[in-house]
Image 1 (cartoon, rainbow, N blue to C red):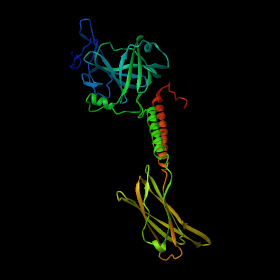
Image 2 (image 1 turned 120 degrees about the vertical axis):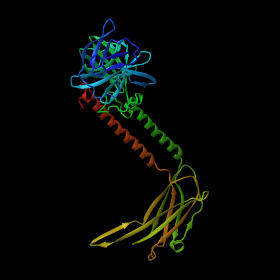
Image 3 (image 1 turned 60 degrees about the vertical axis):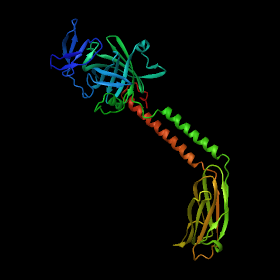
Image 4 (image 1 turned 90 degrees about the vertical axis):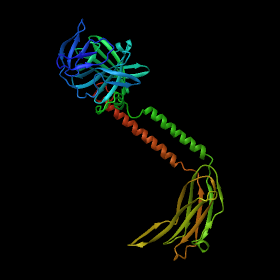
Length: 410
């Protein structure tokens, strides 16, 4: 259908497959009503100009694998000077869908003939096993429009009621006692941009009426709790029968091994990977000793080195006794897996220390520590708690403008 505006000579030519009752010029917002002869008669002109005009009458876009044409655009507002835009989408079969945009947040809606939804006045509505809560009940007027319409745009106020269960919404309109019910769902602006090949869509401001939180808390908790349980069960399965395995316990006398290697007998480790803990003791007194340990995999010849100083100093200064260091130290070689190994141990002491005669070295392949498991579990729990409180804050912000807020007494 092609209509040329009598006021500004703008020609609007798009394919429509419905009976046009009213036409509004996209150029000057002049309103025309179709008469019995099928001619369009000028009625009035809207003065409001919508801020965002990236999507236009006649523009095509594909949503949920269906191609739609924007055949009409309506701008509505409520007394607090809050404006939003509704786009009427028509597919090739003449079916309608509706896009609502407010502060950069988009909702895709369709009309439903559900009689119960149209008549109920309950604060909470259950529809398709989802419970919706009353968000707002208000009156709106049409501030502007453009395009082709199969109905006469109302002049009087429109009574609106919205129930939400993010990301879903039930919106009811009452015009001259005629009720229309729409069900809808939040749709991201990236999908709108892609669907209509738009260069620009409005930036989001605040939180949308049915904008979903970044996480589904219930699903996230189920997934993370399942992961925690799997980690715990796996740990218990792998390490349940593990016992400490003392692989080396040796007093190394400096008279024989000072700065010389001691090679331990071979030992075999079986089971899951676990740390090899090396404990060192030496009778250092205002002196130091050092041990270097090499763990040698006899099958692969891979060597892992570690060393540790044992230092103990003490004295009396300015009327006070002091000491630092210790005669005992320990360290670990982490993640030692099953296999056949031996240790090469090289002890050393301070050359001037004549009183220290030996170093005791004990190497134990430990039962795997639960520390890493508990770190993961605690991290998951803390993350869930943080996300939960962020979601509560998110919901409080969503409901901040509603007199029906469940957080009104918080």
